[in-house]
Length: 497
Ligand code: NAD
Image 1 (cartoon, protein in one colour):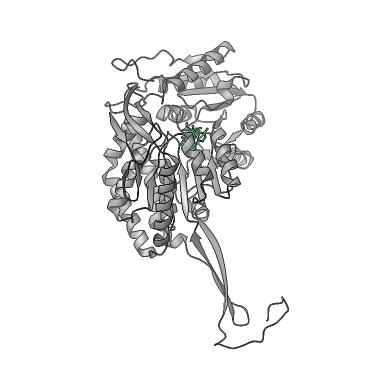
Image 2: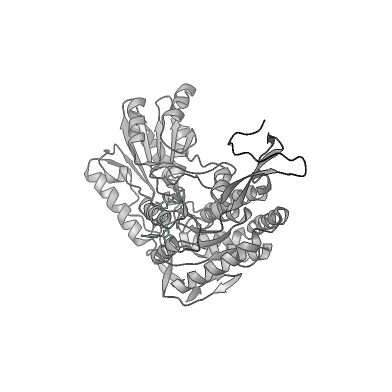
């Protein structure tokens, strides 16, 4: 059985593990590797290494830091196949989706290649007689990134390129089901010339996270995962004096107005609901169909969804893989059963799908539910599976009320051909990322990514300009040079003009 170690100080690190966590292939249900569970001493060691490395890294000139980021970007491109295969094996998504994940992740490396522009300060001269002011931003120190299973490479890449390019050291805690992409990333940073100790990987379960949240040597935490854990990370991290951004769960809605091009909408909705088996925080699990379009739309989505080839992610032509675990499959099936018992019509039923030769894999087929009551948990909970829930509204006013009553506010979209209604929606909707005829409105990495309400705790969105602010502290420097001209000291707080 393969053992997956940590990565500390530029090398694989065994430390003194407190246990081992099985890493499963969700397409076969087989445990294929064991992940070491870090001890408190292992984390202490990684933090000590990171603190020491950061002191030197922060002094490395921007030109050199940018050079390393350019090399890293190229290395990720060159090693996409290896990275994607590791994602397919541990997460289950199909190969082309894994390649897509890497492309989206690389966008943050593109942004980090221009970090010198993002770090420019401001300067005003003669704010008072002979007195100038300028601002600069310095790294916060050691940053920990705590990540979810569903984007094993991309979500960490939302964090480490910006954190590292701005002069921090980084400790990555990958999700236990999907650790390998993080270790490949570590090897690539080494090849790119990043000094040892600036990027580290420490694995484990919730106990490792608890130690990170309390560790005095960690200055800031970027978390992406479910909302209940985001609350823990936010509360405990802040109590221990850390800067925290905690991105939580989602339950994204799209309103479909009667004037929308329903054929266009159905194709996009099917792709957004069932891509990556619905295991994306920007997936589209809910449609609010306005003015009676629900049943027509459901049939049109069904026509697309039943063409989706489900199977193991490396097989030719497969467009959708399994869900992450047997427990996840059981929970999702239970939610569909419950909705059916509450009167929802099961327009397409993926519950009984079996993939020949992969009978122990955690496969589910795309499922379309129409006329779902708002009281059904499949509607208001985060399902995180290949299920599209269609609810009905009589008017736009009722539809927007439904959307805004959701506890989550990650993404939201509208399908319409009416520019005025679309504009009104972008202003009315309580969500951080909004699409107009775009069902997955994920911002490119030179903008920032983040939701509202229970989808993001803390102030800053992730990557892009807000990422730079999160990973740096501002400083304003006011200076005068007595050699230029000497003014007498004054007790007054007034500026001299
Ligand atoms: P999760 O919350 O279970 O795990 C996330 C991380 O927290 C993992 O590293 C895990 O080891 C750790 N963890 C789990 N339980 C913990 C606990 N009780 N205490 C401390 N740490 C704990 O999330 P997941 O199942 O790996 O990922 C799916 C979730 O992530 C979904 O809710 C999805 O919406 C969310 N997500 C959100 C975004 C976003 O941008 N908002 C992006 C991707 C995923």
